[in-house]
Length: 561
Image (cartoon, rainbow, N blue to C red; front, side, top):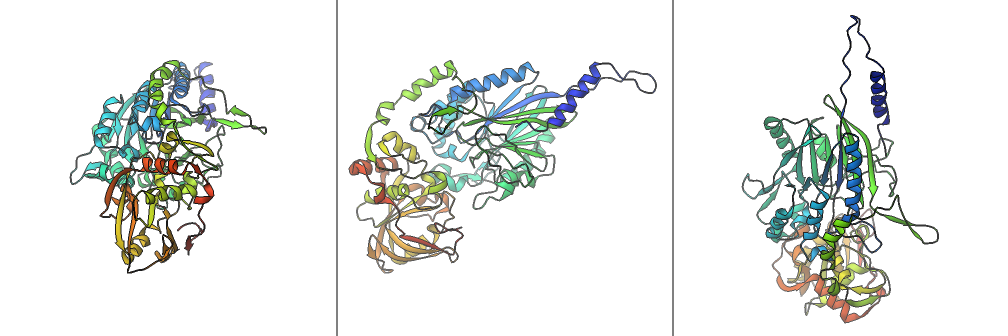
């Protein structure tokens, strides 16, 4: 959406008047012409999650993104401007071809596209620090985060900021990472790291920038999430809270990520989200003098913010979320591009094609079939028990002899599987994190205490538990459970029970209780693949929740809120 048109029009009118002749002051001396504004454009994406290649429908992909970025850059430069390209982080995890290669193709692609900097996202810690350091070695741009420290020290792990000369404007870009990373990432990979309050760190770094650098503007590239009017629920505070925590004017722009939503706010000034669809106009958020943008996820859009800078004043002249070959269907089911089709850049295609092909033959082996959709969509599986959640949990339970029930955090379920053939590629898309399955033995009383914590996790968050093998009532107000049966047998508080849990959760991920568990060494995706293969023809009805878990004293009937 082209906003602030009046400002742009006024500038153009002024230019026309000045070109027509210099006005005189009262002493008949020529008035010097007003200086021209400096023009520059910020392009941005976030939450790439392994989408270096186009999907099966020909949408997305870095090659098409490259073409679009080059087109915009040429246009901007022809009009006397310059481009800054930023990423809100989470390059890792989500597509098998990328996951199997530690996101190497994604970072190679980002180099080709010309990214200038990225925020460190929580999924950058899905791998070991050795892998993260390897990725930094590939990248021709800095990884920024001011609030990640080595535990017990004042030593930052990443550069807190960098300064760019953008068409003569000096712009400091600082990086920030959600403080939830410590509980969202695999504890094995974030041990020894301290994720501090981004608001405190931002205030401190901005003071440091002004004390040691000569800058005109301060931007932030963040992986914290955008939550309308700062209402973040069970998530750590995000970009709105950051903007409002600072003095007005301290921060000029936030390029965000993490919440994976298109930040387009309603025109009524309420601060709530607009009803946005691909191709629609988009008005970014603005809080406390700070523009806040986010471009959904996966490279579905390139965000474009055109700025005019004159005598210390920054004006957003134009803002768009430009679809990258996204498609829709007409009434007859025929697909069409939303906007103009973007022809993928040939060089980018040729460089990335070998990565796409690598391992493809193994990934496309058919494991099983399913007679309906296995529901793993983020907005569903994090708020209610689903057949996919139940299937994954049951696969893990069956992998450990004697296990009576299974717990699966819904944040570890990354996609759905549609009806039809199921390949190993599908399985890796659903479970890309390579967690191992552990078993735990507890008394009945200890199980009650454990489920009091786990079964009452907030619906809508990745901590929400998918559970197999337990019949119980969950009291969301009292944060307690009443267990009727486990594995089909009446529950005995004095009995002894074995259950399964992913290593991520057993180690305290998602703020689950830390457990002493026996690690089977079985990787979650392989466990699911083996279980599906053993079934062969999957009947989704066999895994549909049947009211085994009932939630009381909650705003919703499917979980605690």
